[in-house]
Length: 586
Image (cartoon, rainbow, N blue to C red; front, side):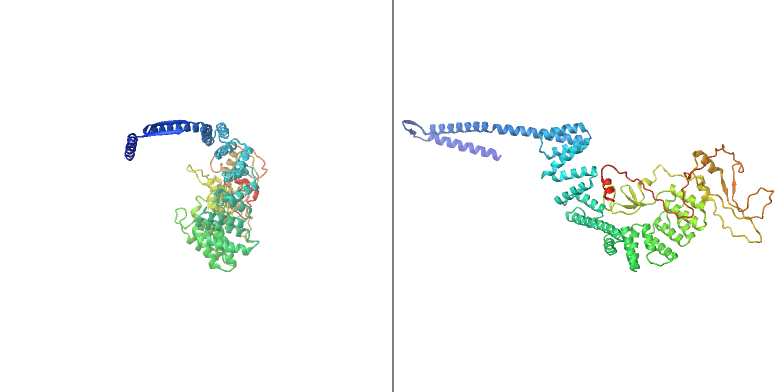
C-alpha cells in the first residue's frame, strides 16, 4: 500500500513539473562560434531529456559488452563447480555403498572439475583407500596435510594409513603433530594416550589426560577415574623398583578411584606393611562393596601378618558378610565371598565348612568351584579318583568372571584395552563367549564322572596288629588310563560302561584258597555278565602310547591350579591397534 501511494505521489510531482515547464514562456538561444540555435524553453527541456536517455542507453551497451567476457568466465566456472559438487556428492554416496568403479569415476570427475575443492581431495583419497591403492591415498593425504584448511584431515588420513601398515613410529609422530595443532582433537589425544600407555610412559599419559580435561574432552568424574587408573598402572610397575613412588601413586589413585580393585589391593598391601591394619581393611571393604573380587578377599585375609589360618578364615567370613546378595543360587551371600570362604577353610583344614559354602554351587559349578571341590577331596580323604573327576568336570564347567575388555580376556588387570586402546576398559565379568545360549549348550557330565562323584570316599585302613595278619590293602587302579588309547570313541565309551566300581566291604578273615572270593580290602570290579546285562562286542586290544585324550593329566599329589582359558582372543591382523600393542609390548 505504501508503495502505491509513493508511486502516485511521484506521478503527481512529474505531472506538476511538466505543467510548470509547459507554462514557461521565452526562448532558449545557444551560440557556438558561427552556429546559433534558438528554441523555446519547453522544447529545450524535452531535447535535453532525450539526450540523457540516449547517453544512458549507449553507456549500458558499452558496459555490457565490456563485462560479457567476465560473465562468461564466471558462468563457466559455476557450471564446473556445480558439476564438481555433483560428482563429489554421488562419489561419496558410491563410497558409502561400496561401489568402487562408480566412486573412482566420480573422483576423477571431481578432480577434473573441482581440483582445489577439499571434498574432491577427500573423495579421491577415500576411493583410493576403497580400492586398496595405499600409495595413492597417502599421496593425496600428504597434499591435504600441506593445506591450511585440510591439515588435520590429512594428518588423520596419514595416521590411519600408518596404522594399516603397522608403522607404529610414524603413527605416533603424526598423532603428536596433530595434537600440537589442535589439542582438542579427540582422535589424536586418544591415540597419543594409548601409545604412551603402551610404552609405559605414565607421566606423559597423565599430561595428555590433563590436556584433555583442559580442552573439555572429558568431564571431572571421568578424569578422576582415568587418572586413578594411570596412577595404579605406574604403581604396579614401580612396586619392586621404586616403592616410594609406587606408594605415593597408589595412595593418590585409591583416593581418586576407591572402587578400583588393583588400586585397593596394592594400597592395602602398603598399609599392611606399615602396620596400618584398620586403614588397609577399610580400603579393601570399600572396594569389595562395589566389586567383590578374589584379589580383595586375599588381601583382606592377609592384611595382618602372622595370623593363623583360622584367624584368616574368620576375617574372610566377616568380609563376605558385608556383601550379602540374597539370590536363589547363593542364599548365603555373593559367590565371590563364598569362594573366598571355601579357599580360607581349605587352608585352615576346615573341610566341612568348605563343603558347606560350596554346596549351593555343586549342581551347576563353575571352574573355580569344581577345582575347589577337587582340592577338598584330595586334601581331606586323599581320594585321587574323585579329585580327578572334579578336575575333569572343571574343564567342562562354566567359566568364572575374568578381566575382559572388548572381547579380550586377560589373566591380569591392564590399564588399556589391547584391542582398541581404550583406557579403563577391563571389567571383572563373565566372558561373553562363555555365557550360556538360550537353547542350552551345557555339556552333560559323563557316566564315569557321575559314578566317581556318587561313590563314597574310601575309608582309611589302619595297620593291622601282629596277632591277626591280613593281606595288605590293594588300592584300586586309576580309573583313567595313563596312556593314549587309539581305539575309536565308541570303544572307549564301552570300556567306561563295562567297569562298575563297588566300594570295599569290611575286612573278613582270610578266605579259603578253594574259594574264589576276592581279597577283602580289594574293590570288586564287576562285569555286565555279573550284573545280568548283555556283553558288548569284543574290542580289539590296542597298545596305548601316550595319555588318553580325556585324561586331564593332573598329578595326584601336585597342586591344582585354576584353569585359565583365553576366550575370544582377537587374532593379530595386518592393521589396527593390535599390531601396535605387539610392537610396543603391551
